[in-house]
Image 1: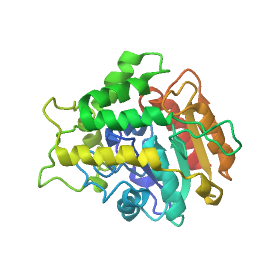
Image 2: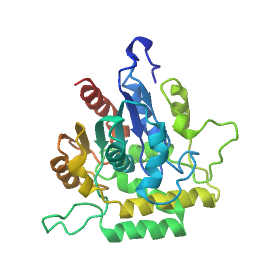
Image 3: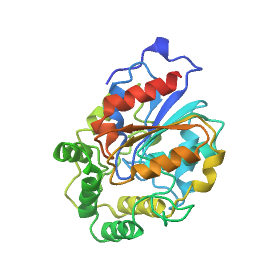
Image 4: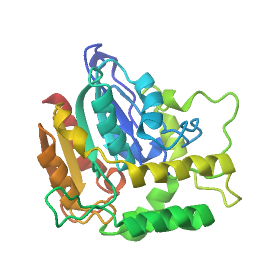
Length: 295
């Protein structure tokens, strides 16, 4: 991954902040960042992920508060999956910091309601989400495997995609060394090797740490309950939606509804792809992000 070019890192240039998905780590963005040399960026770990402290609860406010404290003055938020939901909430709560949004495989509501009515919304069936939550409580490792398999649907090479996702997964039993910097401060483009090293880490096979597993369970509860549809008309920053044509975790219909509801949004659909776009379509994502940042 390239280091930052000082002549490109002007103070007025927005910082690109990459937010990863549930149960993943910032390493999921490493292939995208590799295609963005010379850009100012940071990639914080979400609460309870990759050694970051857990949020105070399962409410959106609990999850975005530590992220707001880490936001630079001018930010282009790039969020994937759960990270896209958090990016929307950050743009809503801290508009003074956010100059633009890039939402990859995102939605304003992950759980479907009755899409047959006018204000319905496409998404995952409530029964599916409930099953994931119950399964994670019973067997976190098996549930994570099922979650990765769902993300691989729609991808041309499911086996390779699952290996890439597994390498960027948050280890359930990870212990944070006392001398490790706070996760909100790493990795950045001044520390590119950190993301590349973490991308080679695979989850341990030992029992999950109860505190760490509880933080991820809170993330599932957040996905089950969050609904940002009412906030969308007030999110007026320019927005780019990047979505896989065959996304099985978050259907393309949800991205279309999101693009219609945001005042200044456009949708780019990547044909022949599923949910794991930062890993399977990293060059295309980087190109679209760069074009958006330079517009």
